[in-house]
Length: 488
Image: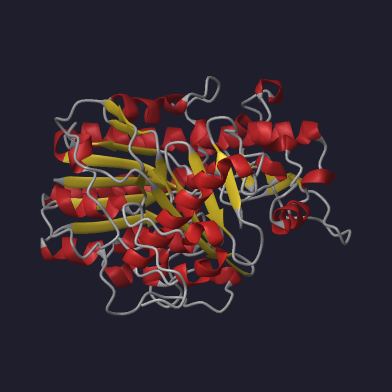
């Protein structure tokens, strides 16, 4: 079985037609969803690039593989996986797979994709490396103009300095964009693998739609800002929430940007999604032309989401909202019927799925579950909750999250905890952690999170023990294995 893995960066799930957006043109991903399995509750293990991508590589949760922050703004954490860490490409190589990765790496500083056996240009970093020699050669071979931008959009920081660049016009035709370049290199790799005849794993990791949104006019102006319904969570007041969220909003200059510019930014983000969808379409079309579709499983997902103004924020950060934790997830296995699944699944589960489809042992991917049974329409026993974690970006900020069918609990040891009722408050505007009517829910989720962290070996549970109030110490063994601090 061949494996084609398509991945975007910082991609909101609500920008795709197959996930309900009526305005954004994503015909290629919509078609993939219509012929495969679309997971409606697909989540990242952590909403930051390097830890999430390391979880995909290893099948381990971030607390276990220990790559906890992006190296550009490291806060004292490790910058590379341990040399003895299990990774799925090593297992695939033992089964004589051809291995390719075209696009964003961002899983360490000393070891690149080639260190793990992948073919392809070495493209490190968090944004399109437009000064890369292979990209320059691509432009020169085709007589295409170099990268140049104008009309930057940015706010003003609290100290009066210009804020981070959010978007700008790119003075290149679509054929010169970094996204078109990546798709072209992926197609070239696909053709080489097809000629060889051995099974292959080929990943294409786009750097977008991560900000800044740098697009040619045709995409920068593709969508009328009047089409944009602003996120309901723009009404965020941060009342009763961790103060870091308000500070982060100021860092991302939300209140210094006119609301019509926010609409424009969202419209430009939509244009970026359409540009990437078109490049994915080129890859999928070539897969069909080469006669490989019936022997190739196709994945599409992202490393995490993006705020684009939701909760008066941009980018991602120390706020575990659905906007950045819920991501697109589509898998098409040849011969399996199209469907939509509602189970809670994770980007980390892709690791065991890849291993399963390649005929490898899935057990080394210790925090990963194969999604193959779900894609085949089966109904195995499956966890009723989802766990996620965060360790910091710019500064250390540990968090853990558990969500079930209705509620989400977020534990912030250095600040106030959060509890959201996603049925009555889907935009997560009201922190109900201290609301007395939800005390039983809070206790149940706190116990359950504590137990799951202990079972996994995540020492964060030690930080949780002092949070249990006197009522939580009424231990019911039918509900939990909770032990108050000081017991053995």
